[in-house]
Image (cartoon, rainbow, N blue to C red; front, top):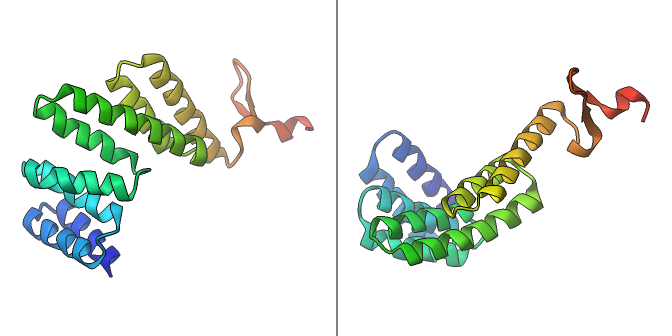
Length: 168
């Protein structure tokens, strides 16, 4: 049931019904206080609405309960940066990068690699960001081809071919 309230809150937020979204997300948290995603989503929305003092405990709880929800570290770092606390912002980004990299390596999804690139860029780690962006592009191409990136080759003036087309 908490998942329904969580999803409802996200839909209401997208529709611009912020007070109703907060109420729905608060109900999700009340029904399942151990759900890190719900806590994180509530904290995120509260931060977006400017209720930073109320948002930070929910973001921290979301991180504590769902430490691999790497986007929460990035959002909390933005809150700290907006408050002028650059050291805390950087610390959260470093944790977000660590968890984001772990997620990206485990799941190999383009969105995870894009998160790694975005966070690495904010930290000034441009080589890591560029490598993550390249991996995101390759992973997306592999999804589009329905193939493993290790089994795809490309010629400089050809296109992308499956290695099976060459008798592997």
